[in-house]
Image 1 (spheres, helix red, strand yellow):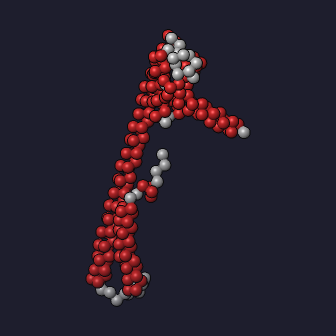
Image 2 (cartoon, rainbow, N blue to C red; image 1 turned 90 degrees about the horizontal axis):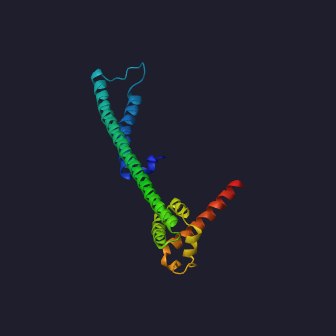
Image 3 (tube, helix red, strand yellow; image 1 turned 60 degrees about the vertical axis):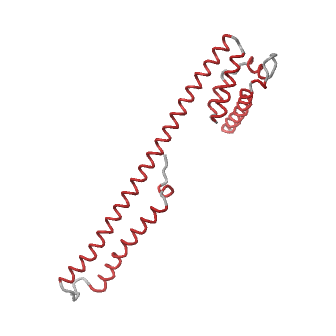
Length: 199
């Protein structure tokens, strides 16, 4: 899983980090300038040891404080992103678990439709179950559920939905009828995709 740190970092955190870095660079730049003006390698600077000590304490104290601030910001930065990544991972796991449970429930329904159809091909109970699970498949937006539903749609069931068997009419089972249309479109897309891959 690719994680874009810059994109996922809130603006306030970026501004805070830049401010800390900026305030850290100021004393460092001042130290470099002062050192260049007052100190030369091998040449006495004219400063006493006490003044040199104060000079070092001043810049050392400032640099140490800002370096600690940078360390704190880095810790906050990575702690924030670690928590965010864990949350994203948890949500994805939860989504996968929910999807697996939905498919398991759907498979049980498919099995029930098959049992009724074996007992009495195209019976009213079978058609009602098909309509119910057709609605679930359409609402889920999961193509796999539609393909699973297609495995139990026999010629007798198709005739029922087309109104060729008396009391069974397409208007009685709107979700099942719509699911069959969606399955037809899906199978055409799959066939076209397979054809394009062979070319």
